[in-house]
Image 1 (cartoon, helix red, strand yellow):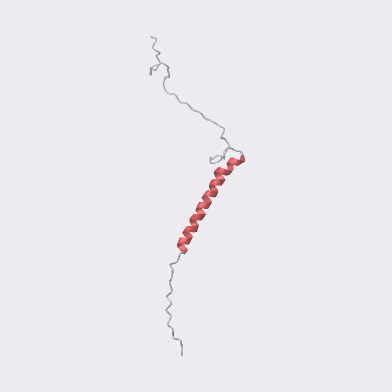
Image 2 (cartoon, rainbow, N blue to C red; image 1 turned 30 degrees about the vertical axis):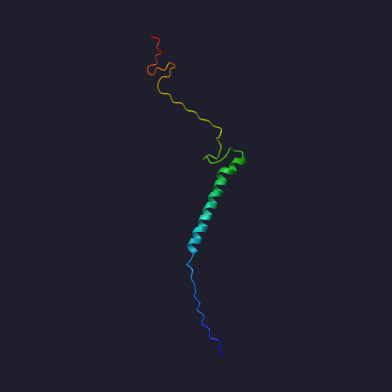
Amino acid sequence: MADNRNENVHRKEEPDRTGSTFIKYFFIAVITIAILWFLASYILPMFTGDGGGGDMNNGTDNNDSNLEIDIDGDLNMDGNEGNGDDGNG
């Protein structure tokens, strides 16, 4: 006696995930490059002795201080503003 079995095989086809995999690994690469750039630009220069990084001139003038004061008008100590009169005639 012959064994007659009918097997129904349903093949499930999954959608192509190449696009989502590419996007996932692309953003992983972008984030990794951004972290490495941050380390190279800001963290590593702190250990080289030139005062830290992040500025456009490679940390060469971190000790320079520029102070500019622009005064228009009179300064007097009695609180009267205007003509410089100190109130004594």
